[in-house]
Image 1: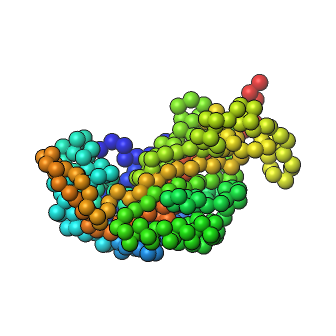
Image 2: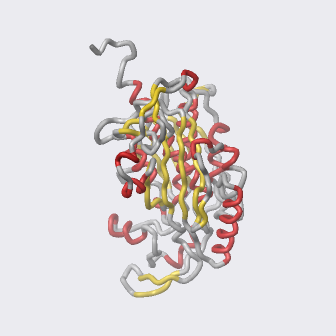
Image 3: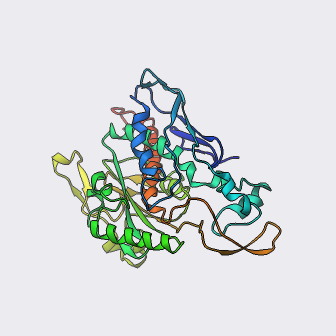
Length: 370
């Protein structure tokens, strides 16, 4: 199956299905000399794992990987990093009674149309469980980026109609995000989000929302001028995540009603302590101009749909086209947002580290360009 790899110089390949033996992840292009151990991957994997609170799926997985290659004596050696995850709590039998039915909102029908057959156990390859590979690879990417001063923080900005009040997304800290199980830095909104998620769970329903992702300390100059624009690769990376239906950066869709004179960000000189000579007075451009990073904070927002798997009856058809109803068993999130945050951060990190490595090869400092 094509399309299982992501990135150019920092390339991630994943394999595995939700209710199979486990998952494989290959990270190719990680520079040699980076201290790396399983413990470096666990913080973000634990933020993604099921069973961490009553707000998420109660599947019981420890999600602790084995490092099979690419690390020698605690240091990356420049060869592909191989990670192995075992599925400890797979329950494929939960899906046996719906194997000939198409779940609304899922890839069941489209997989059959593409391949002529499918793994019906939790969606197989289309399951969001695949993202544990991305989160592990993203943790490595974050560690590289941290060495050049780049920090990535995501948070839940909306659940249903509950909106968080976050005046400056670039000032949000990881501690503020992790202070509540819903991962919203606005405590009042977080309480209302939690209440809403509990309500839809009791009603055997689900609810969607939005996630904001911010990268600070990104050097200016990352991204390619035409097809591999930084904004385009961020959009592709984030839209490749399960359940993501929308992407915007900076002012996003608000530019549709703006005047150019009000939307442009004026350039200004910056004080020496910023470490940058030139910046902008505002950041409606979301840290990217012409698809290349400007040095300002990169701010993205994604819309995440309500979980499609519901324990209540839904109208559907069988694989033969016969009308029927379906009730999905198993363990599913009433709201995907709390566990989505580390997934979104991981994809942002994978895009940024790939473009940072590409930039290192794009110019030679001190070379006379005259």
